[in-house]
Length: 364
Image (cartoon, rainbow, N blue to C red; front, side, top):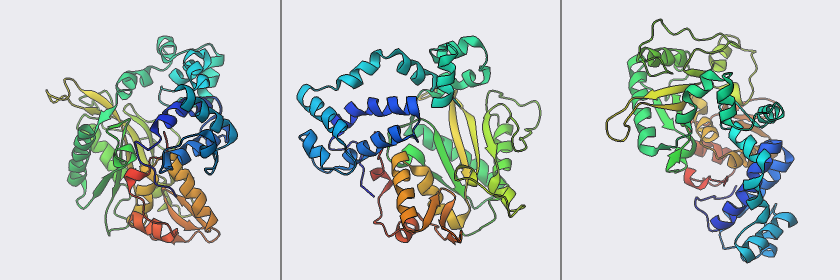
């Protein structure tokens, strides 16, 4: 595992290569070989502790291939990478990038929409088929300052305390990695030393937030919030809602994927105007995630990112005979859960030196 600061020593090279990675993500997907190869190479450059002076020097780094080395030489000689510059005029890439700004549209859906004739998010808006998504689309494109992230966290903590005292919240995501601005707010919730107390709390929290008028676009709800059964469409203001961990406490044999192993709600949070930093109500995407205390450290790591850091961590865990995701650290084969109340427990179990969150910025 590598220390990955932001900004890094070679930030100019990273910025020049980033459009090439982003294009591969849009065209093939972030999990594709084409996307992963570029993402991995750039993450190695981010972690390089010295200034890269040539493509040949970069080529000596792990996972940096000949093609990327040539691009680095081009940048160091001319101050630009022509292939990256050309993407600004690539109509297909610009269309896919715009379409993917809409919530729920990944690279696969974006390509389908492109084939259907859509060329931008505005085309989708004008079609009238995505009314719910565009009710909050413009606001969630606006980055969130750290002070606002903290304000939302304080409000949620206050509501949690009204429901059940003893909770603990950690703000994860880019905020925890030190980013000045965030795209959304990730709030990870647990009850220290009280395993099981977290079951069912997500549903209660969402109902209370709805009653306070801060979920979605209804200031004064006309009826109590009816949360969905699995597989059904959530109500306005809740993008998705799932309780796999709570359900597994009832149905012990229920399986879960790495993403759905924790109770979570992805919501549109109405952050009221305060007359100073917010002249009007702002709609923000907030992820509410619930974790058991015995696996809280793994959950914090899994939701802190960055994407490439997490990918490298999972690969390292696999080599040691473990499976790691935000739901916990498990022994492969036996599925035995390794207690990880703290992040350092995860590093210790995986025989790794602790890396602070601000040095996990392995993505450009």
